[in-house]
Image (cartoon, rainbow, N blue to C red):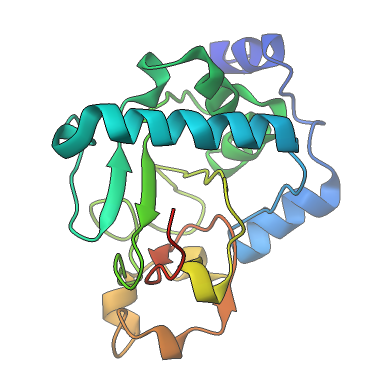
Length: 202
């Protein structure tokens, strides 16, 4: 049994943590919403802490990983407050990531924050990996923690369900991966993410 299986079990994540329907959702569509995974008290505490960090870091916010015009970025949150630990060690999230990566050895690459500013922050659809991979040979899996409601109006993540099984990059399949009108789903975590422009001040 791989060490990662034992390690994840110690954190409460096993092959039976997800329901069969949840595993099927991941396999078929490439994303899995987990509504209610954080309660309102925790969500508000995370919002407040992110605002505090953005204010204190000012123009250096996000510099450890990536700064991006039209967004409020934070980086390396795992080292900035223990309250962010829940965003990388929740059993359901860990089980979903392990399922996507076939329960192979894995590690946390980064824990960052990104908020699109009003009217800005639009992204093309993209894969967070340096090239296409064959279905089932995934090298990375993202989790997105929604501190505010995700809607088309406030800059939600756009997804193309099932695109993780294309074996090709969005730019090789779609006419214009940056065109929001080519996507009909404004959903939560996906393997082909792209963010729309923000319309909510925060």
